[in-house]
Length: 207
Ligand code: 3PG
Image (cartoon, rainbow, N blue to C red):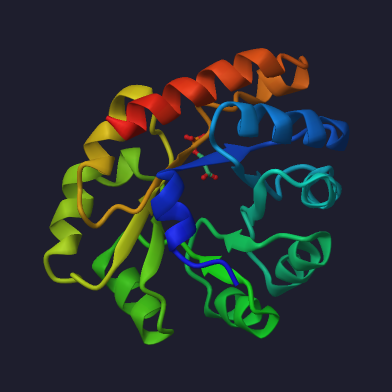
């Protein structure tokens, strides 16, 4: 099973919406070329499961599933080859199904109550979503005071400029976002542009 180290190592999680599963392999190559061999493929399009399967078979990136809200989607994601499962919110049923499959779960939590619900399920790494409208980096910092054992992956409304403010917090393992993998660029086959955006994000995160 992957561990939180994966996120801590990369510091960035590209959140991908794929309209066509045929984009999976060139996208995997573009991410790897940009120095970020990880992808969260969201279950927002019909192409998601096949795209995950194609990326997993292609190799070169660690692929996970995003926007997973039900245990049935966990099953589909794992069957396709997802190595981690991200949810926008907290569902104990989703977390438990991930554990049954031996797959890392990254559920969403943005309030003290949601974090306590996560802790009750022994979850100590949460996606802070939607980060931008949930108080941003100051909110993550404030929540880290009572919940020192919790690590965060803020996602939602983050861009190249705002990422640094989150990454400066010791409790932030990584930030997620779609800014370096624009849906339109992928759909248009502009994979060189994706590589450039990814490389710029990686360079900024290393600063
Ligand atoms: C997600 O599912 O994590 C978000 O849609 C990503 O948010 P962003 O598109 O604002 O980066």
